[in-house]
Amino acid sequence: MRTLRETIAEAASRKVAVGHFNISNLEGVWAAFRAAQAVGAKSGKTIPVIIGVSEGEREFVGVPQVAALVASIREEYQHPIYLNADHTYSFQKVKEAIDAGFDAVIIDGAKLPYEQNVALAKECVAYARRVSGRGLLHGDIFGRGRDVLIEGELGFIGQSSKLLDSVPEGVALSGEALTKPEDAARFVRDTGVDMLAPAVGNFHGLVKNMDSLPEIDTKRVGEIAAATGVPLVLHGGSGSSEKEFKGAIANGVACVHINTELRVAYRAGLEKALKEMPNELSPYKYLKVAGDAMQAVIEEKLKIFNNL
Image 1 (cartoon, rainbow, N blue to C red):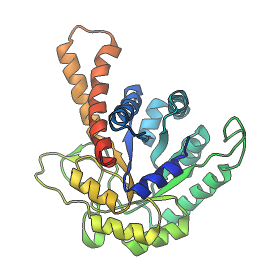
Image 2: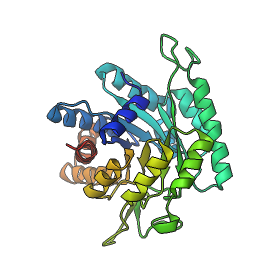
Image 3: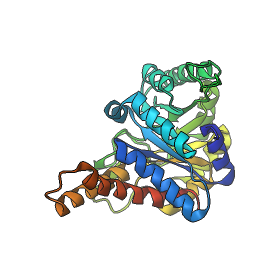
């Protein structure tokens, strides 16, 4: 089985992106996995997928519990499904996720002054490197070390994956506010991060009742990718168009995050199920409808990200 590093590198070389889908419960994990299997079966390809859990989502589902679940699916089905600790704000939480068996962690110091962001990211990178080769405690049954990716973030893109009344205050959407290639290159050199999430016109959440939003600056994506030499990650993908996704991926994005659209789909599916089955008491019956709604969204995104 390829490591996540190898999977990301292959995606970058093929000008496709690995889909990253946040979950808060069991239905979400199975929705992402089944979507990857379904798209793979139709295309004749193996479609990798990343399960993401933010600090709040991890608190709800359990850190070692979600790590064990994803690992068990990967082992049983021999499918490239990975686990990322999304938007983590302290070294302690990064260490907790790495020790639990996560494949990747994003240390989000985007709101911090530059030097503090760098110091925090460096500490996380150093720990991830120490884990590599540490043996049975952090490795596999043969004592081989694990390869944990550390992603850094430069440029504030908001923090809430929800329906919004307006673009979050302080979010960089255009021009001088976007992440600059030279700053991104310096950040990667100073920290040693494996991947970078820049601000390129993207933001977390979906804005209600807004006819048009600034588009992703795909040209800036290409400039940052060329300056840094590391795979880029597009956060806040919910609501972006197929054209924007493909432009960003063609210019250096190798991983795309989706969360808000999945939450919207889940809630709509659950409300539909409860309305159509008002007397149903078996959670696995009405929750299946909500999970299927998420799976449909994930399948469509995976097709776009993989040029299918």
